[in-house]
Amino acid sequence: MGSVRSLVMLREKGLIKLENLLVVGVYHEKEKTDYQKTIDFVMEDSLDWIRFHQLTDDIDKDVVFQKNALSDDFEKIFKNSDGIIFFGWADIPPYIYNNKTNLLSSINTPYRSFLETSFIFHLLGGSQDKNFKALLESRPEFPVLGICLGCQSLNVGTGGTLIQDIWSEKYGKKYLEDIIALSKDKWHANPFAKLYPEEKLIPYNMHPLKLLKTGKFLNEFGFTKEDKPFIISAHHQMVGKLGKDMKVIATLFRWKSRRSNRT
Image 1 (cartoon, helix red, strand yellow):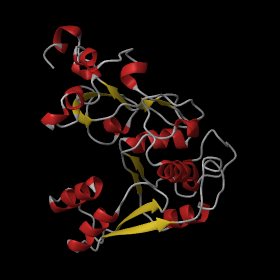
Image 2: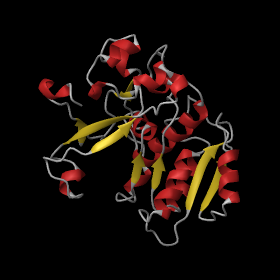
Image 3: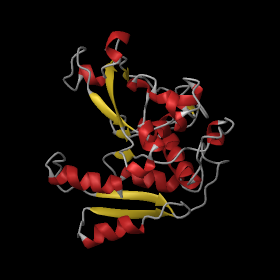
Image 4: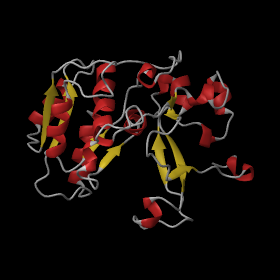
């Protein structure tokens, strides 16, 4: 629901200015997520530019990174699209990237992960099978965007791994109070929202970015190396080993210790 509402708002505010825009939400029938409220919202508001497509052919963890029953669907979606966005939410089952499962990983809807990481593998290829012919080889300028979980899915789909819990694995912290004592650039989500759920605090934290000179932010989007754009985040996982042909173009900017107490 949140992703659809965001798209609607962006279009209403004139930030998406595409004529004849058609957005198709693709999902698998075995996903645990209930999309009916989102479908009802679209129908009730007569949003005829948003549609949904359910995939039904079987897929499991053993066939994600190879030709499978959904391969023809992936190719059809690719050929009939001008771009693809992978959105956020649930943790990816670590067994997909051959890791043991951290106690803090939450596997809610594995079929979504099977679908999306397999689709990404078909689109981009990956280190799982270097001889696999990726769909983007025929349309190298085709845009693929991953937001939040989508970024993690892009990395896993191309053969990368994830850090399953930043606070415990990167900072060695087990308690929220210890996270709060750190500088805010190490929060990644709002720890107060977890500590005091009765307050209904927003789960997000703000982060400044350090833009790397090899990335599109500086070379194509008009930013300068002095710019430190802020983003919002609410996540507990991050990219570990990079997937095939993945490149980092921005990292978390950390204030010097003298300023960190004022952020």
